[in-house]
Length: 202
Image (spheres, one colour):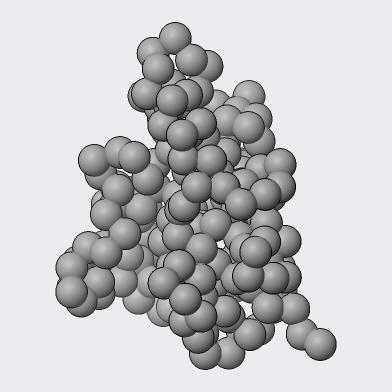
């Protein structure tokens, strides 16, 4: 039987070690004396701090849900509200992987920064930024974005095993579920809404 990925928009915890607990996340990310104070964590994340731990990524990713900039439903038509992401994907789809044009890679980096302003934890966008930097020979930036991709994916993967409705993986944006599945090498079919909070992706 194929594994099913269950995704759940952020809610209080059900069970398991890394399941996001709303009260805990709000308390720790809003306290200036906490090591997980959100402003400090985000500054470290944006600077590409390699010392960020899995616990830091847990509070970074799930703490984003309590920031003003978090808008999971940008508009009635999300495509209209994410032109930077769509332009980035269009640029990437036109690349020759064996001989990418430097101008296109530069454009991807420029547009990618705008896309990350709306969704700073998108595995897809972070991965494309790592690729573009690497193809341009910017090894430090490539590693920085690669580390971010891995940190975000681990935070999501650690939130549940995705095998039952009671042990879903918790995501902040619907696209992130598909990005996690792609990173694990799964192909997937059309998703089905199971309840107000859970979506099955076979």
